[in-house]
Image (cartoon, rainbow, N blue to C red):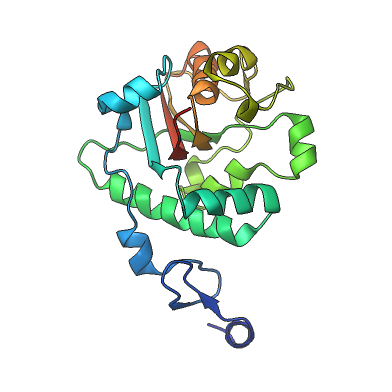
Length: 225
């Protein structure tokens, strides 16, 4: 640590958001809390009958999630997404990185060829100022795999949070376009919260139509509606 970093640490000490242990600059969670945080243990949640019933995905082959939508992660996501509190993004990204590292040690784990975020419509991107998925996942996955602009969302659709399951799927029909070559590839779509699966399934459909061999969905949290 250089002299400037030492000074910053002294002037603005940082503490783990879960246990209050002091931290080096840039971190938001300590290694112990990251390693012991309660998460889903399955490398593919679609092996679970309850998940299949809650999220009837037609075009997604595999599903990865950190946990159910509950505190503290649900609170951190809201603070990051709507109040632009970026330190909460760092905390969630740390948990995602640790979770993927743990899952990748399973014998049947395979990294995808590319990892692509769900895009925002231009109007919503201008209103919010950033795509929350890009920052969340870009810091959690191998950088050589992340392709920020592989998907586009040229249509301005209604806000998904205000719609039911059937309306969500109808709202997203033809919402996405594919902007990279995906023929024969395994693509992982990343998002923050999956409520019905309509968003990732719509994007997965377009990727399959463009020639993708396999599509996974990776999300921070699941919440059934």
